[in-house]
Image (cartoon, rainbow, N blue to C red; front, side, top):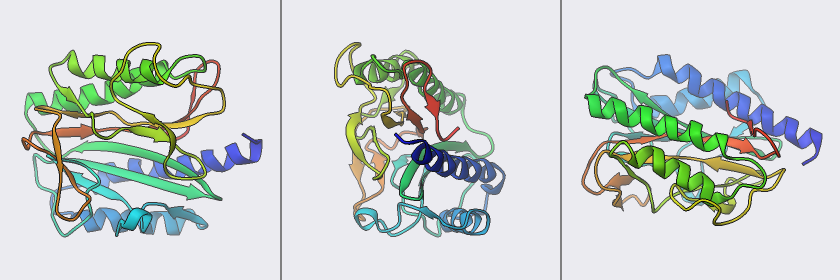
Length: 245
């Protein structure tokens, strides 16, 4: 990757990280999914002219960010549904700057939740942190998946199997796929210069999912609680660069 390209990718990641950070205070009871979507649109337009939110129109997705409540784990279409106390809200955003895409997601706990729900969110975040540590040139996709799976399942939760992380850069989704389960040393070998998005997704119940009639919102089939975190990384021989941190 050329220096100027890496600079553009880092700028996209920085803008994205600020949006997710600002949303920590913005998301509160009474705020709707559409409000969250519009906040991201307005924040980027005001503070980062020339940057774009990549999701709108991608595969027909109608909004600019994904906002998923509780048992809806990913790909939630922002709507007039309001945040309530006790909700767990996942926001997934992709920002494009000069043709380079950065992808990140964060899970927000609103008010008081159960001990298991709080532990679910903490464990899912912990699995991402652990996976980042093994994401270096010479290791494999299987090393990443095994790490995520081990952290999540060791706490009694189940890990997403139908959807996964991915490569990205010039497009939102590129090869290779990055599953949240696997075996050490198996799968595609990580190479210096690769850009990947690792995104652990976990459930308090079964990992089985179903897609809503709108073709987007993905729900836990047993309607159990869910969590989702994601970062974009640049692979190097040593410690990766976390583009969206």
